[in-house]
Image 1 (tube, rainbow, N blue to C red):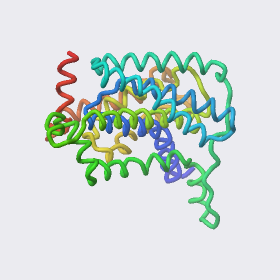
Image 2 (image 1 turned 45 degrees about the vertical axis):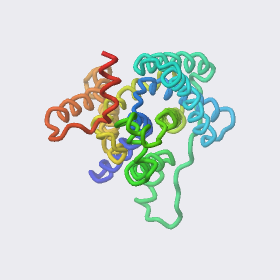
Image 3 (image 1 turned 180 degrees about the horizontal axis):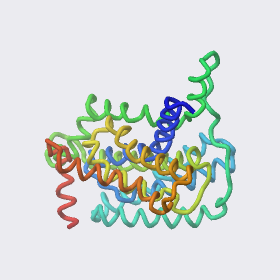
Image 4 (image 1 turned 90 degrees about the vertical axis):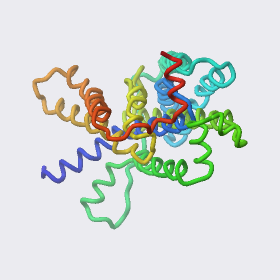
Length: 306
């Protein structure tokens, strides 16, 4: 195998691995831009993964599975919305509750599907392409393409539209936004539901496209890692893909090392995808020249939580 083909295969593998996290990362950015912290995004990914796999296994249609997973994420996010916006519960505590509910429900209702396999999506095929390019395209799935398109679209929405400006105003100064006639509750509900949709969709991409199977706790902390990586995106969806690729590349490298039979414990190698973002996040925090990207209202939430 040539070095060029190996590099392309590693890149595609990293992109495939990072795609579910990219969706969760976009959802968390939308939420935090409106002043909503959602630790429960991990639980929303889990119910999305379980529902998407169940729908796909039942209907044979992975697109319906993805929509079902996204819908399950939206339903669970309503719990977070009711607790935070109606009951005025602390957002951190509410997020922990949502995470626990999502983990429990996905484990219980997903039990009949453990060990089953599905076909997933058909490879992308465009007639008339050169053989090397056609081979690369066969390795790229529709969810990977969607994962590349969604971040720039959301960036345009947040930073180049009037609605996006209002969305960010709610996250920066909700009191001032209310004076200007903007209802923060409306935008925060939209942010919570959008976060749930994207998290559920990401969970669905994980079970239907990446793993093509379901197992309890299969997200393995991806949602929580996404929460931490939001800082590296500077709350800008345009940075989602390269930041998510840190996790994807680390996981792809870890799996490649294991497949080559290197004499390192697989338990230690499984830590690498989580350790690499942590180290880079620490370096980013230490050497970043500019601070203050975080929406101002989040400071009050985090301060209250401590």
